[in-house]
Length: 79
Image (cartoon, rainbow, N blue to C red; front, side, top):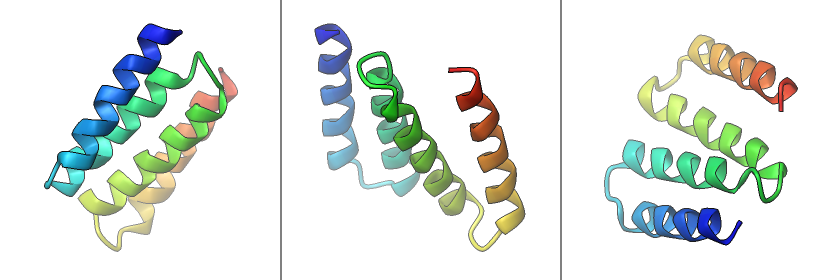
């Protein structure tokens, strides 16, 4: 687990330093997914960051947000 946590810490540092909001969200998603084996709740947090990413990519498009959330719900059912 310590290897995964070290990778997640590096990804979070990249996120903090990133100026592009879309890339920042991608780093945060990757960090949460990396930590999922450690604590399953990280899958929920990764899902929330994915929704934030979709909001940045498709501003004011609730259809895209809904589609992504439904995908995330199905993925979490399999965890």
